[in-house]
Length: 241
Image 1: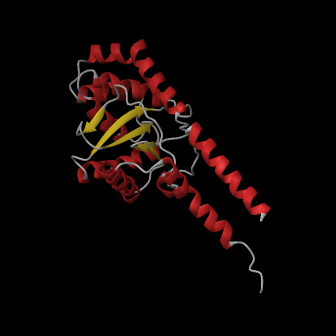
Image 2: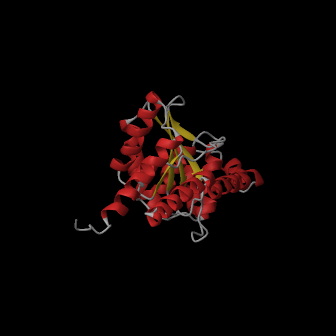
Image 3: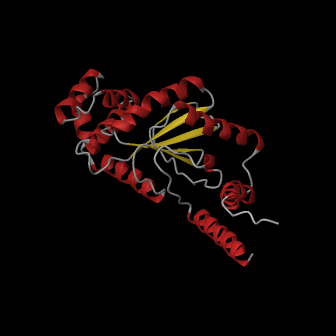
């Protein structure tokens, strides 16, 4: 009996500690009970967004233009925006990984294109490029979008653009982003290039909470703890009477 009490007390202490830190690592692409217990506080800042500004569901995406998994996720995100045109807004945050040599310059090109009102058009070209992200390619995409090329080149190499990228990386680090793509759907974390069905689960939950209000902290703790306790109990030996 004492052993069971100590195990439960330890689980409760761990849950409260993880909740207070606002950090929890999950396997890429594997939601954890819809992350009911962990709701991150996100800072959208002035990041580019697409979808209704009054949408009740906001997806914050940390992404890398050179990441093949991020490119794969774009198809699913496009489906989300098509299916939820008034309910979902997608906000893009730059998180170029150090292992990708062209990711940061591609991010700078997207921001520079955004200064001329063409962020999402450049975003689409970069992800469709299949890794062709060298300097000549970036200028080719800018010309394709009919951008002011001298202004584009000046802005993408500016300190302001580098600061924007650094601020996004800092925000991702605060949220314990370890890889790309990483999503926060009304603050709930979802990792990896997951299928549309997984996005829909999170969106449906967020829409329900927008109508009814989010669960209390105690309910979120129980939603997280209940399956753990059930699994523990089911593994205990049955004593013959």
